[in-house]
Amino acid sequence: MGLCVSHGPIFFGELLVDEAVWKHVEEVVAAGDPDHYVATFFAPAARRRALLALYAFDHEVSRIGLSVREPMAGHIRLAWWREQISAIYTNGPLVAPVPAALSETVRAHALPRELFDRYLDARGLDLEETPFDDEKAMAAHARAAGGAIVQLAVRVLSAGERADVAAGHAGAATLYAGHLNDAAAFAARRRCRFPLSWLADAGVNAEDFFALRERSGALRPVFARLQALVRTELGALNRARFPTTAMPGLAVATLARQAAIDPFSATAMPSWQRLARIAFANLSWRV
Image (cartoon, rainbow, N blue to C red; front, side):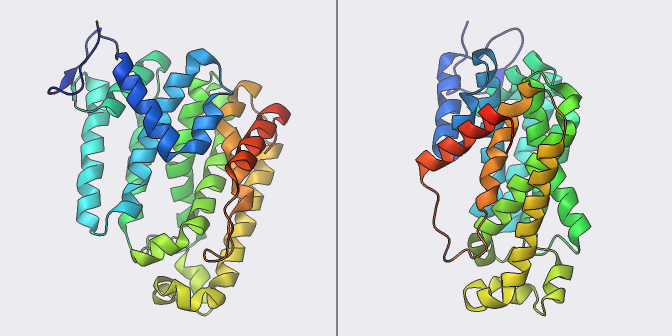
């Protein structure tokens, strides 16, 4: 028996998500997160839908920080997601396709709620102007916001906790690369994703970051510092030990190597090249 997601709440008992829901989830990931969409094709067919549900969830939550200008609006959307995650674990009403698909994924793979809660708490920091006083605070956010999703993905891939260390490095590298590549968009919304201590070391401050186009030269040492941290995380990932079954969940991190040091002059990598890099990572078990 299928579920109709267009008429009122969805109540989960023993019902399965219908094909319309999965089609919607796949479309969300294909359009909004094409890199992870490609990566799911390297996973076993039986696990692919579960990965798509995770990546659709991540896409919808992670874009909140870039799509809203008023923090309160973002916190309202995060509160809605907290309610939906709670409903998944308490058999409550689910009111949209992505939570419905995520519910089936959680049940099928016994995913721990703790990782979802940690992820949503970290995403709340995306709405603050200057959430990171130092590198330690930025790293904690990266492990929670980026690493938690990869940890959940490798559990879907039957790697369990054996790949948690690798997942942490992969998630952090990807998130740091996002800080660099989306720096201009964050600056336009007066949200700084770099530690204040790093800015001070470079002789600049948060206001200089918010005026990024004018001060991009002065901020280059800060960008270079984070780019070096991306390389450190990727090196640690390649040294980590993990079951090869986890690789489809880790492979997208290879794209972090192209993190922009200048958000105004970076040339976007062609889609075919991104696909090739993801494929090579899956085949070589290295990023």
